[in-house]
Length: 178
Image 1 (cartoon, rainbow, N blue to C red):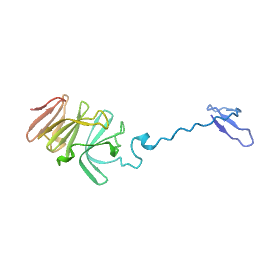
Image 2 (tube, rainbow, N blue to C red):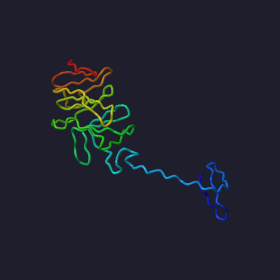
Image 3 (cartoon, rainbow, N blue to C red):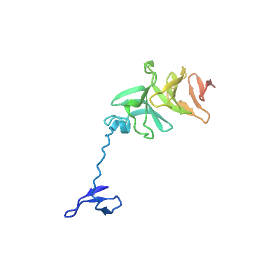
Image 4 (tube, one colour):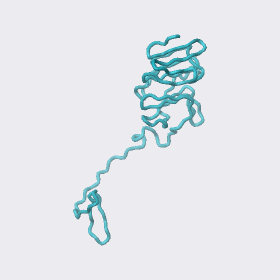
């Protein structure tokens, strides 16, 4: 209900249905505490949400991008997770650094059964990303990386890739050399 003032008339209260009543008892407004932008959206109002990237994949309600360029700075070993169902918004604080000290860069990212698979030139990492903010590396395979994303293929039963040391297959269990 809201107070309606009409010139030359007593105060009327709107009932929300379009009808007016002469009920003049006032109902005080209850002030709710203000929510901040970060509480509502999960990121700062002035935060950069749009980044250049070389690789991307979807897992559930999230999109992941890898080998990031943001504000002119390239982070070749970084992955950023989107906000849920906001596939084009990537808050800077949603990042995952995938073994940043190895001097290698991400060459492909894909998913398998809810896990994020990150390919670098020399290695492959499987990350459990089911709990945002608590992502962990669950598998690490050395000397089986790829140089480019075209060397990786997702199949009905797992992820296959080829490199100079052979043909590889991962189905969520063991890594198999074919």
